[in-house]
Length: 271
Image 1 (cartoon, rainbow, N blue to C red):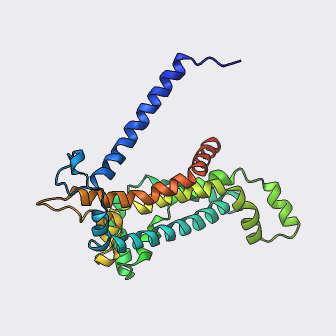
Image 2: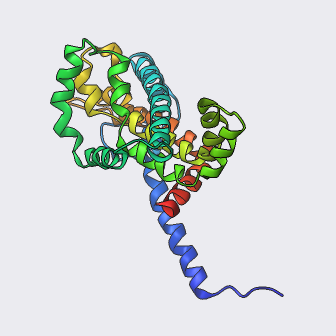
Image 3: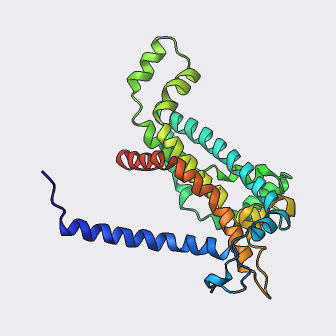
């Protein structure tokens, strides 16, 4: 027996399709403009050249290749550091009998209320006195924050204490319990945190602009800002850079969207 399709279902499908088209159109327009030499954002079909000269020029002449390398190093380092520190800290906060840990955790969460712009000057002075300007460490270390620990602790609640106690009785050490029991159970949260960290590190502009003074240490968002000038702007070049910058996180999300949605959903239920 065929199920009857209601009018509400059809209307909902049309609305969702229209919304999806509205979301995709700017991306399509960005890619289209990247194949032109236009000095205006208004283009026609005759302006499209369908060659990769803008991409080639951006990668070879505007240090996009160096910026891409720097961004990849910063993103990989940030994801690894944030995942390790956040998971271990969340494990300690949730599973270890540390005196005063709740007050410490609440105080740590309070740091999320401080706007990042407020601490830019103190952070710059601290890294400058430590002679860490123009280094990858200065770009990676500030990515560690309270959000990652909060997210991972939400998932640590679901790890059964009885399972950890049984493993301890069987002679399983602390490190082995953490690696073989805890990490597999919080894998969706780790993937979600990795995606959030990836996006944050990949799109970070203000802090890399301040802490790095050498052109060879620029990351992609900072290099993107150099593609336009006060006199004339080749929007084809700008959109080619924007397309290159957008491509990597888009591909990452395509491959990890299932784990990302699962992690967000489970985190919302546990929260």
